[in-house]
Amino acid sequence: RFEKEKEDSFVHDHIAEVMVSTVTREVSRLQGFSSSFHKQRLASDPILERITKCAYAGCESMKRAAISILKASIDASTEDALPDEFNYDEVVDEDSFPAAVMVGSHFSDFVGLLQKDPSSVATTAGRIIPLGRTRLLVVELLCTVLLRGIPSVNEAAVKHGVVDELISTFFKFPMNNILHSLLSPFIHAVIEKDLGLRSTLFGGNFLDKIMHVSSSDIAAEKVLRGHAVALANMINDAAARVDDVNSAIGQGGKWSDFTVGKLAEIRSIEDIQLGGGTDGVESAKTSEDEMEEEDEDEEDDSKLTPYSFSDFRYDVDVDEEEEESEEKLFTSFEFGMGNLVSAGRSGGKFPICTIVYELQQISVRK
Image (cartoon, rainbow, N blue to C red):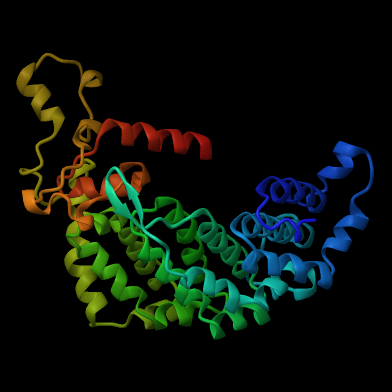
């Protein structure tokens, strides 16, 4: 029925919900019968092959539903194989992750979904190129598979350019904070734990893209700057502890110049604006100083913090003729808190609705 209904999202979502409940063992609790037989059936190669095909070759609702089934199966297998904490240093038995192995055998098909050129959409802010729910779920599925650390699967990922395509997607959609927040932990795991993917990560133009975005004046790329700076700091931190990372970034090259130049400048400004650092203090007049000027008798606990949310309103300086340029347009709700801080470093300001939205998202996640 799942395969037959080509455009019925209700059927796809309903069947996916039942299958996800089966692999996560919720069926036995809700309906009073053991799901072990059904779970084993779903883990069989013929069934997994059919579900995986639906995930890359079906209609959009079928793809999303099938991906949710595959991800739930991998997550459930992780819980069974390593109930306490996933240990990246262990060699993982691929037989414990049949769904991950099946996805790995179709890496080229999933990479094809990421490479598909999205259509632009007309909005009140101009035409934008959306990431799309399906592409986001594909990224999440691929990260889930690669983070299991299965040698044969990750070797296939290198062969089919999965890591390169994930990094390309990261920078292709600079305004999508959900995507960046999803990929950042994956990149961190590869940098720290290798997983057989570190040489591929640093072998491409990953470092060049970080340096470009961190120094870019393009409005859309400024949104991504917070994540780019965080990744740069992460890389330098790992380089001090991991020889392979230190070798990958090289010594005395462009990355070293970037670290002591632009990155150091950004971190210095951040320290000053957040109330720390030693350079340029005179130019960063704090609210505390202002309070002392206004009223020397004020109590210490009534003084304002040096970094006020009122500073976060984003203004883009554009000529009137360029005001409608697609390059200058962006949607405020996709800002992350890290990006708020990053753009604020350069004097950027944000509308209060952005602050409220991001705080709501943090509340939901925590």
